[in-house]
Image 1 (cartoon, one colour):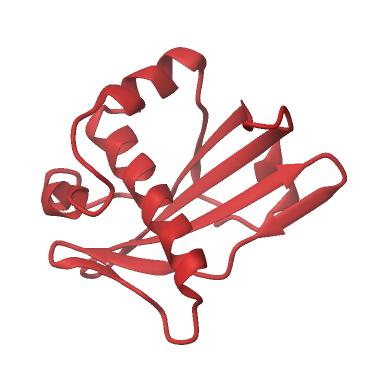
Image 2 (cartoon, one colour):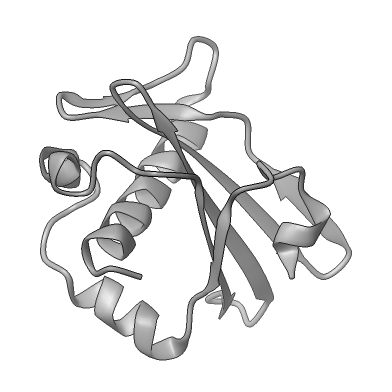
Amino acid sequence: MLADALDLPPDTVRRVLTAEDLARIDSYAGGARDLHELLAAVLPLDRPRWYEATVTAQRGTVMTLGYLAVPADDGLDVSLAMAAPGQLVRWPGPARVTVSGMHQPDGMPDEMFRELQAAAGIILRALLLGL
C-alpha cells in the first residue's frame, strides 16, 4: 500500500478504491473546480481521509495514486502522491480547499496546482459518495 511509504497522520481513515468506486467517482457530475461549492456537504470532516487507487496510464504504465484530505478550520487540505515502478513522488502541498475555492500555495507551479485540483475533485466526489 502506498500509504505505508508515507507519513500520514495516525488517525487517518484509509481506503483502497475499487474499479466500482472509481466508476462511481467518474460518473459524479461536476468539474474539479466546481466541486468546492459542495464542500459544505462533507464538512466538518472528523479526521483525515486517504484514498488510494492503482490505475494504468495511457502508455500502459501501472501507477498507484494516493489522495489525502486533512481537516482544516475553513475546509480541507489536500495532497497527492504517486508511485510508479521504481519511483515514489509526493507532490508539494497541501493546497487548501474552501467553500470559496481552492487556493494555490505560494511558489507552487501551475501544473502542480492543476494536479492538486484534480485530486481535490476526486476527494470531494469520494466524500460525497460516502466512500
